[in-house]
Image (cartoon, rainbow, N blue to C red; front, side, top):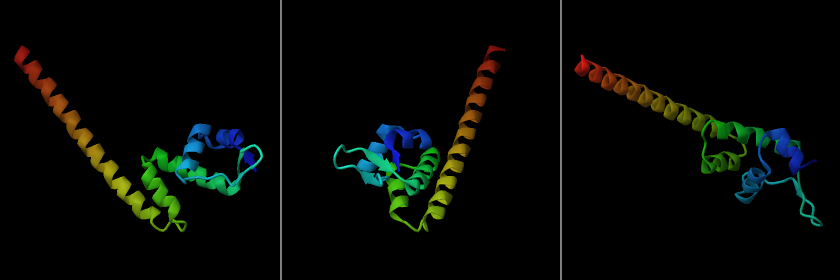
Length: 114
């Protein structure tokens, strides 16, 4: 069992984030000591925390992460990842178009000066 401070260091999640994740039922401590309310996490919690860190890095919302965690078989995770990938690809295409528009705008300004 790991104290919240140790678990925070192991996972890279702040103690505040771990408390918030427990509050929204995303990642609850394996044990809470009734005498002092200290939170303890176990190895299973570590696996879930690593998954949550990865999902957060991939841009998943809290609601999406809750959905993943509620589906204990993770059967829907592949589908969600494919959807997320498509969304990111569309954002990349939009950003490329914006860059082209900026380049065109800058080029048109240079033509007027000459």
